[in-house]
View 1 (cartoon, chains in turn brown, purple):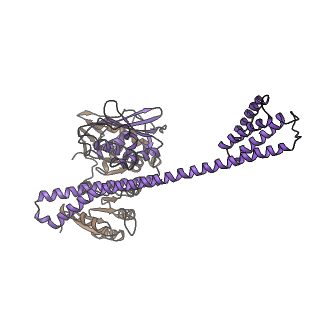
View 2 (cartoon, rainbow over the protein chains, first blue to last red; view 1 turned 90 degrees about the vertical axis):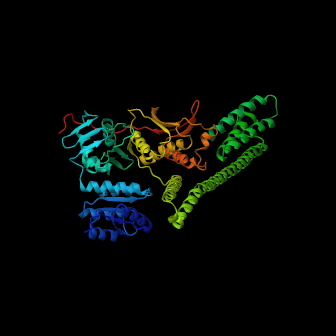
View 3 (cartoon, rainbow over the protein chains, first blue to last red; view 1 turned 135 degrees about the vertical axis):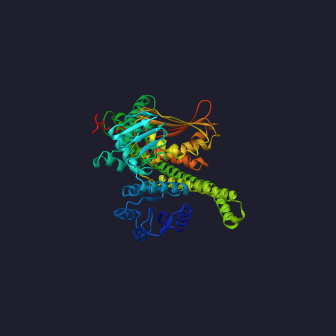
Length: 229
Length: 344
């Protein structure tokens, strides 16, 4: 039995499929290619891939539909490919269950890094583990945080924010998802809460809060927590 | 407004005429009134012209035509005087109107010609900026495709690298052209939300970290900057374009400083470089979109900032260097409820 991990690529442009196939093969993944959304859904059910890469601009129907359908039965990580002008589609895709996105044009190094993070995360969820952010350590279960060995006091909301980001460690979490999970469904429009609390968190945990290396802003979309390995 | 001028002109004419009355024949007095009509006609449309003519006729009749001090007219000759005054006024008014309309049409034509000139200059500049990278891509890619296996691996890698870089540049340029076109067409609606300049700056510095690595970056943002209600993706572009522009036009290891402060109800954001500086005449010109290289980036910055009701400009720093500054209007941010002291 083939022990390689399988990646489903739902993309209509043959040239883009070609270079994705070459680079994913070179990394040792098995690749299943679907040229349209309908085929993508069938292939997802048939091959049970470990991860799906879905283009948002598919000819037959919206990539969003593919994501929603896969999410009905599978938690497999989904990475969407989007063009730069599809800002809103990107957010919709993430809110519909995609785990991360990458904007065209992209270098393949960038894509492979996203794929690795998503696959690792699927195997071993981050919650419960100790997070290591530079010189800061956070234990979400025990609600303890230190920076340079000294205790750091984090408020309840700050812990909840970190926990929500850590659930998708290395991947993007939208404003809406964070607000909904930390403050509740009536607060999903209150982006300013996030600005204030993320600033506090950075000041407490980042070595240089102006140039964060762990609590990253995805401008207009959300946040991404990047921990050390 | 025109009617107030008509009344004023008539009063002044009457006063002047009364002054002249003692020394001159009444025929000359009529000329004073006529002058008033012509002056009003040069500046205002028909309505005020008719008004001043009528007022003048009434005043002339009352003060100068015997029997004086009445509105009665003995000599029917004066009726002709009235008619002439009105006629001259209307003719002059009609003429100036036509001249004015023609000047307006001329100006519109000039704007159109200027737009056309800008468009073709832009096209020329873009095709120049595209041609070199496309030549590199075509050449390198065909070398790899046709002679690839005869080349040592490091040369193959170098060729592939340069295809990668040049293609990325082309893609960025195309994105910019598209962006500028959409901004000009008014096709971009701001997606405003409360955001923090610090976060936007952090994201930009991360995105550009490789390109800015050749320079010394200094970030000077006060801790208590208020939140701003902006389209964050667009403001990130403005900051990115300004920083890239500073890095591109100054020698390596030049200091670039990103600063912000609140001043007079606005946020003033500055990207300062301590490079060779700009000539006085270039400070405005560099924002024009056909200015080669940087032009498109800065023209986009201007369009975005103006969409946010802010201003953007360049100034020379005393001594050496250039500052690019833009403002963003501040609004009162909504409050954030304080967190309960003892968490559940």
